[in-house]
Length: 199
Ligand code: 6PG
Ligand code: NI
Image (cartoon, rainbow, N blue to C red):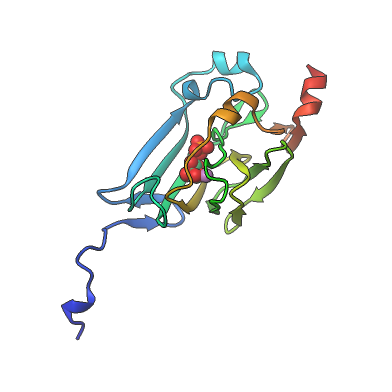
């Protein structure tokens, strides 16, 4: 017999479904990013302007059992990025540095195919392939952006410290050092320097 003493009455009723990215519970927060919210991040501004601004690009659900900014806690979340493109460029997240560069993060892919773009403060940029089961350790010094390079929603789980914080400003201003394009069915990592030359 299991005594009630072994049941934590304060346990939060949060449940996750690994494959679909479902995450439920009273304390689960949710945000949606529409194409209209992502102005300026895609290369082809004309294609972005002519697309429906209400198109959902990605959704995030997360649980923060401790105060954001407090030390020692961990947050848990899931992001689902729709499959789609703006011009040749695949749908992606804003991307950010953690405000506290000593705070790392884990990502693991549940569904879909994509690229995790990572960039250091010197703008050196590289990509890791995301596919079901891939696990990604993101050093706290590196900016991170996820790109859906496939034909189904890209779903990944994340775990990060409660005091990681966000620096979106640097990416909004300077972008990443590379872009992920899809041309003739091929996924290409194009350094920003090459794109500038072409323009
Ligand atoms: C975090 C995680 C992750 C991320 C989402 C959306 O630090 O919270 O990296 O939950 O916020 O995948 O990406 P953006 O925050 O870059 O829009
Ligand atoms: Ni992060």
